[in-house]
Image (cartoon, rainbow, N blue to C red; front, side, top):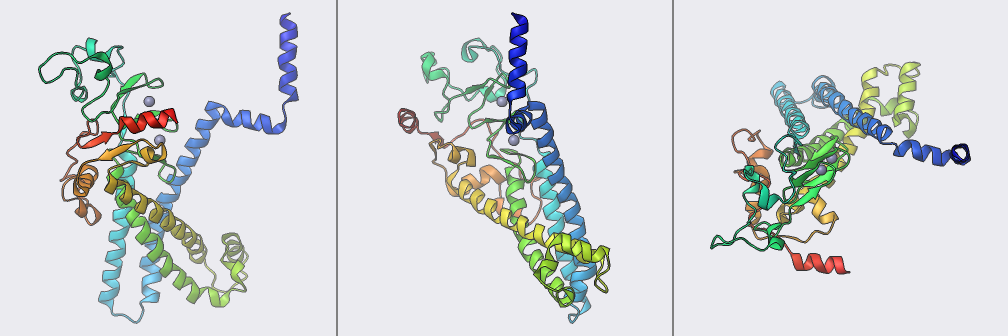
Length: 354
Ligand SMILES: [Zn+2]
Ligand SMILES: [Zn+2]
């Protein structure tokens, strides 16, 4: 009998088409994780190469050639400005990556059943749950899973812990993300409560560095490379690389080759930066996250627009875009209780019944 079963399984394995085998291979969790890690490393490697080489090109080629007719001081200040842009971009990129917005699954994890009744010594982030009414008597059980804003504390089956409101599990990061906005494949991690401010500033600089930087780099190529090129195909990176390698053009140097690749990347970063910057600002104005928008979670913010911005960026939020203010002005909220943000339960129920 066992032999028959084994034979049957063997036949099924053999009868799989190549596409099915590929699909199995792809959906294997270990393989999937390897792919995701490789993609993350690739994007991070790309960013770490792009920033210094682009700065180098501007310092030693683009500014000296394109602004040749301007005096030394103008060139000097342009270089200072370009360096400032690069530092802001890199610093905010690093902060987006390094500020961990996951909720650690450690010994404090609130994974006991019957959270509200049996948890004797709750960690501070549970204090916002109302288990009693104003007179001090216990609320009925079905009210206890909702906090002041009407949010339900859900249990994450994967992390084995209760999630604060607006926290959601990310399959790619394999963790619960505090105020999860979205998983960003460009930076390789989730955007949430602790790193959203850096991410928004990063997208702002991606637009500046991408479009303005890309424009001047393109101008330079137009003046120094286009006259020697045969057609637009010479602007394709593999063709440019070939022409440099086999010396088909006089004076075709490696830096032109690198610059051609950079122009593509700059416009790509600029495009993504613009898309994300505008959506992020629109989400912050409404006091929502992209996750809530995508899942049609009926969130309403009763707070002012200014309050919503302060919630993400801390006090004097506009300064974040010009200086690294993050160490001086921290966010006042804890990312776990949400004053002035309401969940519309009626809308939620309607949604479910539809
Ligand atoms: Zn989780
Ligand atoms: Zn993620």
